[in-house]
Every structure is written in structure tokens, then in C-alpha cells.
Image 1 (cartoon, rainbow, N blue to C red):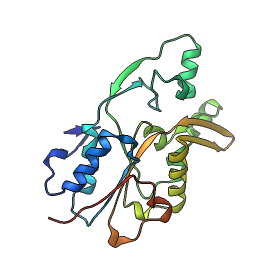
Image 2 (tube, helix red, strand yellow):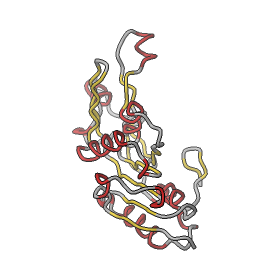
Image 3 (cartoon, rainbow, N blue to C red):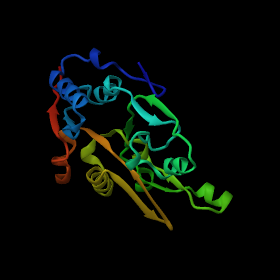
Length: 213
């Protein structure tokens, strides 16, 4: 199976991890379960299973070319670009695509996560322009944080604030921008490498433990 240019191992081919697979399937059925935390030693297919989940999720309808995956039928949560498009009297172009799984590396900066000023555009045209971050890409999708127990404190706080409000508000460098950021949070960790931060404990609706086979 190919997902955004990368080969992904099929979820149905994973054996011996019934509890983890059941948890992922439940999350696919009901995204309102508020995410899942998978704990276990290395080599128990945690990351493989998370990335394979996207193939089971139904396609979503989005505005074609929108950086924020706006729902064309939900006018209350459209981004500024889509609203400007409607203001011109034009219909929003629609298309279907699979739900995205956005990986957050441990080394990610806050600017890369929430978005920042597009410096190249400012230099070339002398105007401020917002450059979307990974939260924009993950809107209406899944954010996957491997080794979640080792994540930076500031990044975790920012991520949790956005997960609570479902809105990303960026105000920096004379720039102010707001867009919807609704996502399912999925994390994996090896308990031997450290404990989970207290503020993250109650953010996952499901928690499962994998064991070596």
C-alpha cells in the first residue's frame, strides 16, 4: 500500500497485537474517543500500525488546493483564503482525498508546528503572508507523535492548547492569523525511556500496551 509516496504496511497483516489493533479500529469507528496512546517496547509494530490506520478511514471532502483541508459545506470553519474566494461570488472547488497522518518529529520547532511569516514572500513582494505549519496540514486528520514521552515541554503545551480549542491562533512578527485545527492525537512510547508528562495523561481516550511476541 502506498500512502503519500511512502510504502505502508497493511494493518490486516499485523499479527499478535490484538489489543492494539482493536483500539485503532475503535478509533476509526468513532474519532470522538479522543485519540490513542500505545505503550510498548521497540519492535512491537506500534508505529507501523498507526500509519496503516489511515487506509481504513473513509475519504473526506475538502476544498481543492486549500492548505487547511476546509470542509466546503461548513462555512463556519472556512479559512480566510476560502472566505475570500466565496466573497468573489465563486463556488468552492471540491475534491475527495484520504485522511492525512502528520508525523511530528521530536526536533520540531514551534514555528514549524503552528506556522509563521513567509520570509521569502515578504522579501520578494514586501507583504506579510502566513506560511501554514503542520497544524494546518493535520486539520481534519491525525497527528502522530512517536516517543511522545520525550517531546519538548513547550511543543506539548502548544499542541494540547490547540487540541482543546480546536483553533490555531498565530500572532507574531506583526502577523495575526487564525484557522481551524481539528485532529485526532495518536502517540506511541516505550515506557523504559521515561514516563509520560502529567498534562498528557488524560488527553488520550484509549490507552493500550503492546507486548513482544
